[in-house]
Amino acid sequence: MAITVCGPACTTEIKNSGRACGDPQRSYVGAVLATYERNGYDDSDFIAVVWDGEQVTAREYASTRGWTYHNFATIDATPQARDAALAWYRERLLPHLIAAEQARTTAPRVGRRVRSLTQRGKNVGITGEVRWIGPDRYARDGRERVGIQVTGEDALRFLPAGSVTVLDPEPVDEQALRAFTEATRPDWRHALNDLASPGPATH
Image (cartoon, rainbow, N blue to C red; front, side):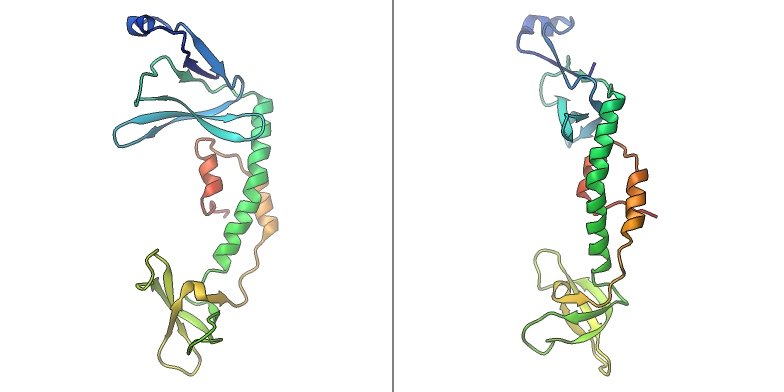
């Protein structure tokens, strides 16, 4: 049945009578992959995840914010729609995972050796091991600060985390990520969030 919403020709009299919708309008027939409810503070929205012929997208079909009692959605994706949606998802997941893994391996963390990128001041070009990482009290956007142990010095040098680069970061195993992607079968209720998040664990 796909997504069915009550059209404008359904009169108020019909809506108030308890009878079936007088103007049911259907869309995404054979293309609904999943449905879920998104709960807000006061209201709930009802979402269908669909394959629209080009991409996987989310469509709101009902809400407690207004009169939508006749609206509903049924999971009815055909095998062809599911295959197309899965191929689309995997094609986008792989570069997303590679970028997330590259960000992870190049992020300053305790135990990693880093070099300062600052252009002036006492910390220009210094290298050392990160011994501390925490909130940068001088930044208003929640960025971090690192404490670097420079060889031969007792005190740590403190810099914004964005002002250092990791030396010899771990290589990204793209083959393993590709194998993970090819075996992935997403929960369509969360698939779009997967592509926006830092990336799921691959092992």
